Image 1 (cartoon, one colour):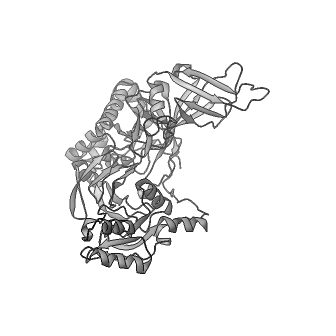
Image 2 (cartoon, one colour):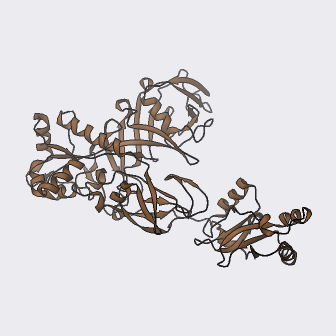
Image 3 (cartoon, one colour):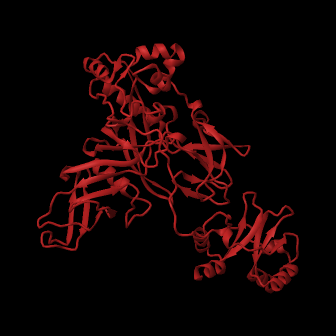
Length: 502
């Protein structure tokens, strides 16, 4: 369905005419909400022509298309690196795509595609290295040079999925820190993170996409860009809509395009986006009055490494922005991964552009879809999980003596005994080597030889993740515990080796 350019007599063409003459009334989304609260929707509709929005956060599905121009003699690039970041070669001889999450070969987890895009936008010189197989018309097989953005024929930001309507709030139930695209999550629900500008977010101010679609002109990275369609994983029925955007990087500012690295996760690109909402009718005006306390999202346990992670409750953006949330009855710190300050600056900058007739609205040629569904991947290969190889754990109580534990090791022919309390909760682990050393050293208290800081696994973890834990911590077994820390079994490196052998 193509958007109607009319709405109670107001059209985008008429608004643009008012922008041209300096008569357009423009408010940021935050200002609009205050006006509606004080004067009502009807007054706001009559007084306001455009509402500006903004968001500034990590948008991993981002990147840039560049064209290097032909070398002499020419080369048909097969593989290429810019500042040691390998870039994709999706097109003809010298077209490249810089993915924001690609990491440097020499500085992984510190420098990546996002930083490379920022450096180019900032006017910095970048090293180019490329290889090719050589043809009669493209004889060159190696290329080493340097470039700046001024040397490029085209340099366009082309982002497949940006500007989620809202994001989940992430926390972690595990006993160890985990590092995710939602940042560093402390163990046992000690902190939480979220992202997004809430009521200032572009897609939250037009949740039914009445004014946003293919061809909508937007603020993008400090310059002007366009919406070119719905973003990948667009899921409007769940209020997880996204947009695909494009803009000329040569007009952008590194203030609004920033490379970033998430500790032990990888690199990304922070992107500033602002979308103008033309107030075509009272319905649109009412939607731009949406408040933070009316935008809810789920608190999700990222300690469960599978799709369909447990939902621990709901939270609204007013509570998120307060800095504290309640998880399992406890008040914990919650921090934002995006910048509300920058989002506000984007909305204000866009407002100024429109007020000074430096930015005009464009009617979309096609609405964003409102019925899309984000489906999971079709998988034809079976994945092994911890619960598939978990066997019963041999256990003992922490008040037992070493001799009793030694007899259990012999009678059960095991190398690991898990120490539990009366409730079946894990308290530690002891190995046959620990017992042997205790006997040699004349120790008789079990408490003296228990390893109390135990690395564990969850039933729903993949075997690959469990194997990685064992290698990382130089251990040969993992007690398997449920969400209540109760021991449900044990897996060993031998179990994993047998499964891989089969």
